[in-house]
Amino acid sequence: MAEYFDRIADRYDDWYRTRTGRYVDRIEKWLVFSMLRTKSGEALDLGCGTGNYTLELKRRGFDVIGLDASEGMLRIARSKGLNCIKGNAYSLPFPDESFDLVLSVTMFEFIHEPEKVLAEIYRVLKPGGEVLIGTMNGRSLWFLFKRLKSLFMETAYRYARFYTPRELEALLRGAGFKNVESAGVIFFPSFWPFLDLAEKVDKKCYKKCKGIAAFIAVRGEKA
Image (tube, rainbow, N blue to C red; front, side):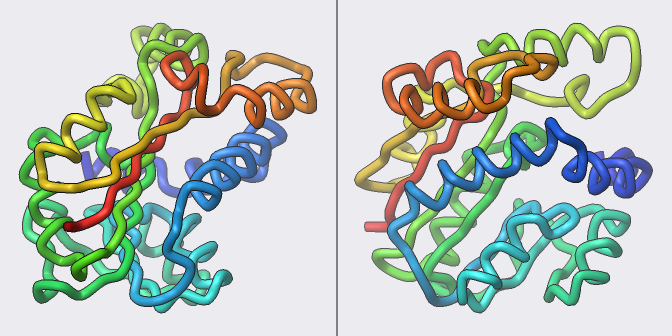
């Protein structure tokens, strides 16, 4: 997978400057940061990619480090002045109880042993520390379209494993996290033209309709 993301790194980063990309980025960050209770401290952006969330955490005052397996993605992240390292999510290169927050957005779709990664996240979090995982939901209209597209051309969705909010909650509870909760946004397919309306629906339905949202997030706290 790292080799694939090396190849698409520039295209991946450019997507955030498209009209759809700006909307997706804005509403996903609205959800993520409205759910987080941790407002400062040591943070790990796990699966940081080109540094989108690493940069946002830095802007919000966190002492943040990004980690990713793709050198191509990290090259772009470092060009933004971010502290990012190459590493393996299954064996994090940090001591126990290093972080107040571990944030991981659109990485869990591409790992094969989520329980092992969650055990590592639990290990590196301080007592009372917080984890938030954001992933794609395969039950949404958005990603049904994207998955069909991947049958005819190579996209990241061809390699992804999708989760439901209930599955993500169960994984976190199984890893020992408490106060687990989830929510979701983006309820229309990617070609939907009325983005102002879409955003209003997102902010109204992010809890009640999370099961069909394209982007889902689950958070929990270390006991």
